Amino acid sequence: MPRWPQGTSSGFGKRLVLSALKRGDFVISSSRSSKLPADFPQSPRIHHIVLDLDSGTDEIKKNVDEAVKIWGRIDVLVNNAGSVLPAMLEEGGTMILQKQLQTNLFGVLDVTNAVLPHMRARKSGTVVFSGSRSSWRTDVPASVDLSSVALGECFAVELEPFKINVLIVEPGGFRTEGMLTTPFYKENPIPDYDELRTRWEYIFSRIPGTQRGDPAKATEIMVDFVRSEGVAQGMLWPLEKGIALPVFLPLGQDCEDAIKEKCDLVLDACVEWKDVLRSTDFDEEK
Image (tube, rainbow, N blue to C red; front, side, top):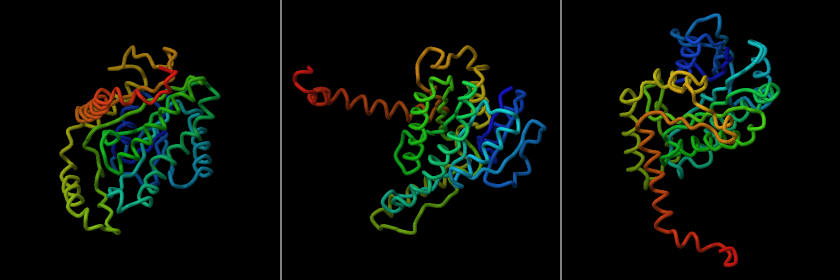
């Protein structure tokens, strides 16, 4: 029965725990704090650890190595933890990006690198990376989400010889706890952005509780894909077809719409500027 570790104190993570436990799996849950919500799942098949993605490579490796001993192995790594710090790029600058990248990219890389030796030794495992609809749209969180997606794509190529699958999940708007509650960064306000920032603040304030997505349904589908059962019954992972690619799992019609919109935009540019973009090869190569 698969052993799952993940960031699980709320949101998708907490619901993933419920779904995995329902199917008889063993779970290593993790969060920054040992204090868990009162409604957190209770089971002899779940063990909670404190794991701070900002604690550094060595500390994370030590914690992961100890976590492996709990159930004897890790079959599935779900990189689910993260943070959102909304800001205008010029106002927040590298400071805001560094804060988000430390948790959402470098911390994810540290955890993944700590788990991989155990998976490589068994030549088996699944690593899940979390992007979002935002990776197809434009804002600071989008650039961070896109980095996580790129990380997953790179790992899919590097891990192919070791039979380790990669799943990239990209949810749209889902009604989870604590989303978009962090206020906009305003410590370096630039008056030229006042109107745009105010508009984004208003949009963000209207989102919580109105998202169309049901996170319980989404996490059931995620577990189906990892286990190749339910809605994913009979699905072949790219590695089973000899292809070093991840499986992409967009969730929600709003995410589907964002992906199609971005793809259409790029494809339209390729068509419109076809002769120009093809004119850059050396003449003898044509």
